[in-house]
Image 1 (cartoon, rainbow, N blue to C red):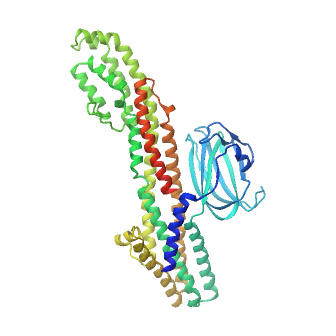
Image 2: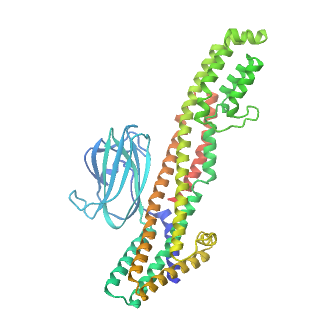
Image 3: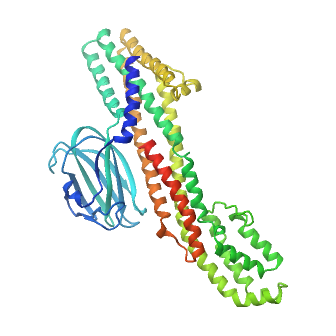
Length: 498
């Protein structure tokens, strides 16, 4: 019990510390990076298109390698931002470590980053290196159909969950080795207790990842930022569009006005100024018919027979062409904005699906973990695992640890070597399974970082698509709010999940 409590407390403390002081190596690929890396191939520092700062590392198409000049200790998660030259560029980056930094050293592959052609802009990648030793880092970079740029690389300290996993591997290997040599229960008892303690400690890791998954997309700041971003693609936000609608109604008959109201209804109520989310489908179904409607409304044969006053007929004759041209320009500007918003919405929807799948799979894994320890995977026991009360979690963990140790000991005392081996291997399989969830979570956090990056760039002042001063000001007002909310969400994300 005391051992289990100590491990769980250490894990929580380590997790908190890792979030604030876990970086063991970083490279922003500024000019000073020449002292950090050796390179083989055609990689060079460039000041074109850096993600942050003034520089990035550009590697031409083909095969290139970067070697760290100094060895790095306790490499855990590696984070790296990569920019392809075009949508036709694909790349593959293999991460290797070695005790020596020469080309002919025994370089051990630890992870691979692969990206197919089709995406533009910087994309975050987060992968597990998980090497507790002090090793040199090497990146083998292959790209096709264009160069790739690397920026803002960092590696964080190896997490306690990984250290536990490596300890589990030693314990299990020791149990199987000892079983071949000696069946003495007393000799194996300590190993069984250690196995049970480490097995129970994995419940805390699973709890943390489930909490991360449950909270990852529920931040109010991100919801508010997305809301402001969607308002920026709604035509009803802009005076130019509202004036065009007002002018069209002025020269239209009653039935034409009713049709116009029906066309703009999906964008929100003009009187109450409620703004609905605009999808690409809504816009494409609206833009061309709306321009056709304007062309017909300002056609002489139409407004002459609409029962208008003399002043309104004169207004239509003098202003029709300009109003149509203004509408065409505005809708073209809005379409560019909507393309950005649609891409962001699609990215976020994809992230949400991945989070949902991750949560469901991890919930099943948690239930299997409990069942293997002869603990019923009931709603009550699941609640105990996820409880905010540490004492409740420790009590259940102690029961799990005791059951694993007791079950292994009973197989040994009964002489059921085959069953014992099966039980130990199944225990190992469940413990090893957490690595897959760790890798999946790295992919989710990579996608979130990339989403933040693209969102931030989409609301930068230079991205304002409008030419009319009033429209530019409205866009910037929403963009300013979106930037503030996004910063709050991004800061919260970094503190909680990285």
